[in-house]
Image (cartoon, rainbow, N blue to C red; front, side, top):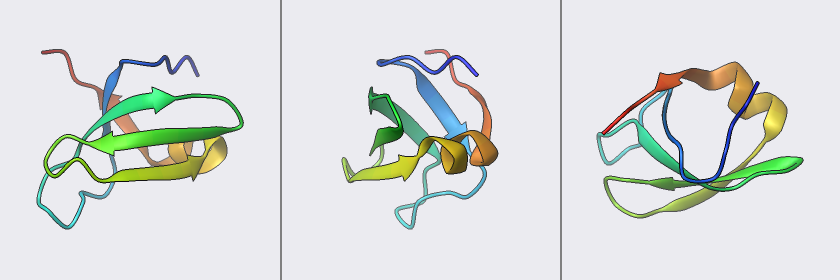
Length: 59
């Protein structure tokens, strides 16, 4: 799967702040995501991120 820095994606579960839009800020073996609702940053294993991926959001 092709995930690039700067892409905005939608994940299976939404963040507790109520949004499910995430900005990719780092890729590699782990993927660092920034919530676009509350600016919280999380790191997921690439495998977990790809499993939870639901689509790209274009804005």
